[in-house]
Amino acid sequence: MTATARDSDLVVFGATGFVGKLLAAYLAEHAPADLRIALAGRSRARLEEARAALPAAAADWPLIEADASDPASMAALAARTRVVATTVGPYARYGMPLVEACAAAGTHYADLTGEVLFVRDAIDRTDAVARESGARIVHACGYDSIPSDLSAMLLAQRAAADGAGGLRDVRLVATLKGGFSGGTIDSMRAQVEALKKDPSRRRVVGDRYALSPDRAAEPSTEQPADGSMPARTPDGRWTATFVMSSFNTRIVRRSNALQDWAYGREFSYGEVMGVGGGIRGAVTSGIVTAGLLGAVSAMSFGPTASLLDRVLPAPGTGPSEEARKSGWFRMDVEASTESGRRYKAVAAGKGDPGYAATAVMLGESALALALDGDRLPDRAGSLTPATALGDVLVERLRAAGHTYEVTPA
Image: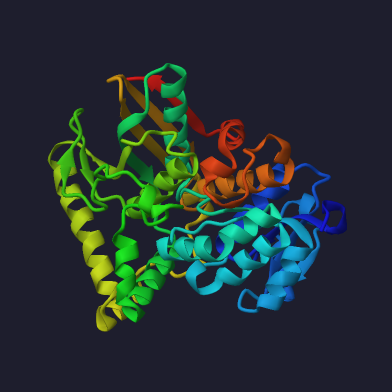
């Protein structure tokens, strides 16, 4: 189907949810006036309410009733637009019919998933179809995993430009101010549930190259463990386990493999969270690391899972506008190369990373898919932000106020 046969350029699916509303508001403020945007969700009444709260530019945006659990509904949605940006998760529960519909229809797709099992299943079920139809299926277009993915890409580009050889040891330290997203927590629940139903899938979750396009072709390079014991960086900061490292690292390794291991066959990549210095940092590091391990274990056990449900953020909820504005994120990434040269990348931005900053990242990803097709990497199929959007997304995010830079270390 040609672009002119479609009545929308971009559809926001999940526009009545918390993050969906933030995404729609961002697009209303930053999308070109002539871009044909529509809002989609299950309830027309809720869509009308959501649209009424948006900036004036959205007043005439069409509304589309669509049900994530109905493959026919998803097929109809995908057929009428060139791009879908979806915030409807957990994606393992609700996402597959839409991914399959977009792959079949040649419709570009962007989501916010942080779920290894969902992405693995989506690759297996839609990659070949999307490559045939020309659809770019782009997962992880928010704080998970755009800063990680683009930082590694930029480091590899700089090293190559300097003749420094491939990347070897790359370590990211994440610092942030913001709360856990209710959607992220629900995604963690969904993955725990999937593992309880099929324990054999633990092999997939535990595989450092779980999202590789060709697992047998991956190098034997040792990769850091997903969790980490409290440790210190050379400058004295304490670090702890970063909750999204087990997902982000697999996205980054997939990006390397999809580009024929352009980052290097000896590329080793890991992530931790920075928690400060001194005694306070040491104590915080221990608490955070133990707390994350305990939370995952608690989600696997009925009584404690019910208790957690009462205290953790619920899906579709989020912080106040003031809290979203006061948040921020920063990723410091240090890398060594095959020649021994060292580089440092910084990815940073204002706004709560799971909400305000993520709305910017998904919004610019969707706009890149809708507007910049001729400038994007010549790829289709199941992709990552770096391989689908690359330097175009870096440019867009810089223009939106985010920082992406690489310097010699």
